[in-house]
Amino acid sequence: MAETKNILLCGVGGQGIITASKILAAGLISVGYDVKMSEVHGMAQRGGSVTTQVRFGEKVWSPIIGLGQADILVSFETMETGKWLEYLKPAGKVVVNDYRIPSAPILSGAADYPEGILEALSGKADTTAIKAEGIAVGLGNIKTMNVVLLGALVKAMGLTEINWEEVVKTTVKPKFIDVNIQAMKAGMEMIK
Image 1 (tube, rainbow, N blue to C red):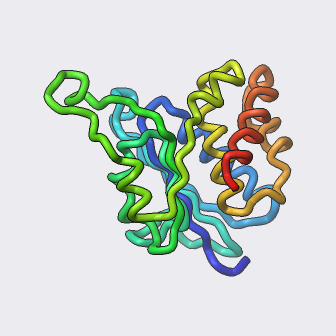
Image 2: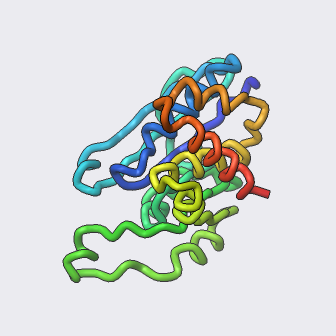
Image 3: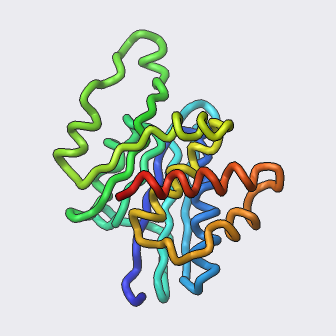
């Protein structure tokens, strides 16, 4: 692959975005891609935005994705998607978790959670919405939402030739290997 591919993951602190990005990077490296990753997690512990940028290809010179350059945007929280949509290529894809984490103004009653986000996204980009919470809860561990979304990303990007089961075994704690392998497979099944 000569062309560099750009993946932007976004969400709210505590959703496992950085962990998902590290699993993704490990998988890409395992098959010989040059990978660069950048992360921003300023006020993440207080429910703030978290983003990671993963770029891969034959040779990648910078970890930063510019405006209009992301091949795919994976959003772990519905409302966060809109903050990063301008980074998506015109023909890019969006995978969005249909999951709400109310911000401080919403929690305080100063604002309402916006309605119609998924419909608006579908009008602007090729969008697949996934209810990763339900899948993760069904697997017995809500904290695997991140790996469900990672599985969807892997399938959407056509990266299924990588041995993700082996990558998960080498990147997560032993007691969480099996549930994360199940989460990865379940996420892949969400993309047609």
